[in-house]
Length: 216
Image (tube, rainbow, N blue to C red; front, side, top):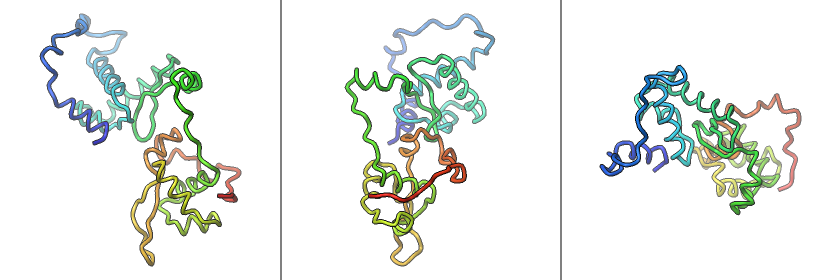
């Protein structure tokens, strides 16, 4: 079950009585604050709380489905939160990533966080893996034989390693002899490169040097 589904289940479960009677902040006496309607402020706070609880990007549809708001209103609230955290310029920011929204630490502090918390640096991708991944990203759905034709070398191991990292996945079969598997990118690919959707990839015409010459 995905994170958004787990949060949906939690929303449908009534909170325990003792929790409901616990440390709850007093209600606002005023109908508005800083000129914004109280209802809108409450929704923004609820959006923020749900995003804080999720360890995966929450799509716009999650908020529409669970909070009874239309897509336009949800988008306005989410974009406002993105702007708010951007203007604050602190250690936490809200990113639109992988077809959803997610809180992440500011890249400014990544080195210090890794050192203090003892996190290992994320393992990078070899030149051959990056080449293979770029071909799949721009040509998907694509079969292994087509990848190897473009690279000019065997790429089976590159494809296997990219699948282990959950950056690519089988997306069906091509109507060719033997019905070979087609490959495409995953949501993890979007998160890995900080993209919201595949259309955020730079167009090939915008890339001055795009060479497939390489070594495995």
